[in-house]
Length: 255
Image (cartoon, rainbow, N blue to C red; front, side):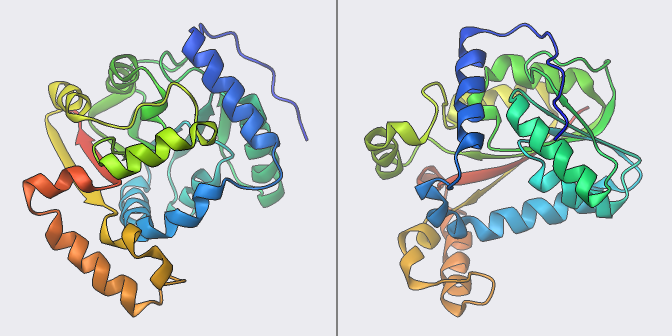
């Protein structure tokens, strides 16, 4: 494995804690226990992947907080003109580079600080990420995304919500499963995004599909999942119930 040269980027104490947490996470041989719940968000990931794939052809794309490049690698098939991935964890980037070489993929990976990147203003047509913004200073990261996006460019992110009291209780009871500084989204976070981007769409996922996750194995093939995910779809049309969702898909266009 080629070792990535560490780029000197300004890091806050929170940045350093996040870097340490994710480096250590990538050194572990087994996945997190919480992974068993993520099948409840199958439709969210499906919608996310389809949207990114549709928008990527002949575009300059950035995977913002790419981790080991699991999603970045899939986007290659949509034929972007250029594809970049950045992450604060050099352990993750080393793995991403190693994997891309094995698969012979043209992806430009680098260690970088998402709150203050090395990229020039108005570089990208599309910036996407999964579960990254709630680890960052949102004011800094959203402003940076806005800076490096081209006019009419889009940001597409998946983020957890911090408004379901039972999910918050679980988070409180399992502090070692997550970094100490992460902050699932609240109303003020959406307000901040709306203040910078003209067109913002938010889709909500994961209530009945999470409650009844033991009743299905493979969401792609399960009739039970199809029924309860449809219940979620109509359930989240009611404003009050949106606060009970686990996660959201955020799509925002610049200007």
